[in-house]
Image (tube, rainbow, N blue to C red; front, side, top):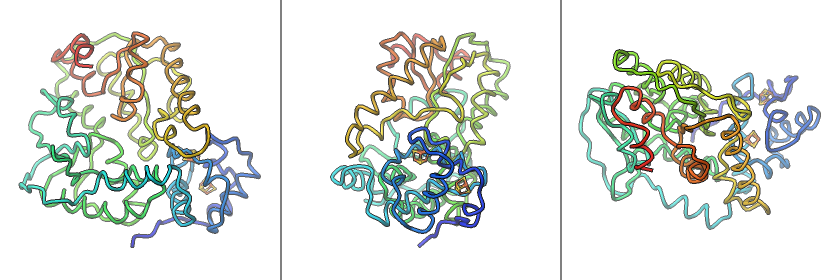
Length: 353
Ligand code: SF4
Ligand code: SF4
């Protein structure tokens, strides 16, 4: 079984304990943070293991790349602490078993885009931006051969990821792709951050969707008409696993002439969408999730956004209706880019929902 590469000495000598002192869901001072992280390192119980809402952010907060969130999930599983109620965990485990039946394997020998579990979003990868790409994704029979499985971080089930992800990678590799563009950055985080942390080999080159879109837009630059509209960005938890790609939000917006509004909850200070919190078994979780959603929506509205761009389909589903109620158009980055090159309009997005 793959073991987490975690440098315990770093925690013993760390002066910041940023992993816990920066946590937006627990109020933890330095001394407490030091005490609790060292308990977690030693495999002892800590209130952090029970209070963590699994927002992934401490992976970004640790200045040494020491994977505190993966360690938290390791310890949750070892101590039988499941953030979600057991029936929900069981249902989630069974819902996306990747290897029921054999996928059809075609050699691609070129770039491929992986929709992972989101086969219903094929309409988000159309037009000139995606010319020449082959598509792999779960199919209509809900076969999850290409789903990275990282969502089990929210369920305290890290062993399941270690068990399934190598087989998912092996299935993708059989297509012989030159590179794999990840529609969802949770997949990108899986093939980069998670695989690095556990020494799982990835034989193909994973590419983050935003980096891909930026490079395509550069090639299609002559078609771009500045969209001149105020746009907010809702950063997802999975983006904490690849913070080096977050800069592409700004780069894309600058290129297409979108005005990125200044939010209180942005960049490192982002608030998750609350989806995974609302199902957690801790008392008051649903109320807490609704409060987080309210904060996000009000923040987007107060920043003056007319449009809100999402990276994660789950965040989109969670917040889009509430945004529409306030006349803010929710959309995906790929659609915003397609607007800038004249392939679709904001009206098309409003109509398609
Ligand atoms: S995980 Fe990182 S930030 Fe947290 S105590 Fe260890 S070294 Fe410091
Ligand atoms: S994952 Fe989020 S809630 Fe959990 S300890 Fe890390 S920063 Fe805090």
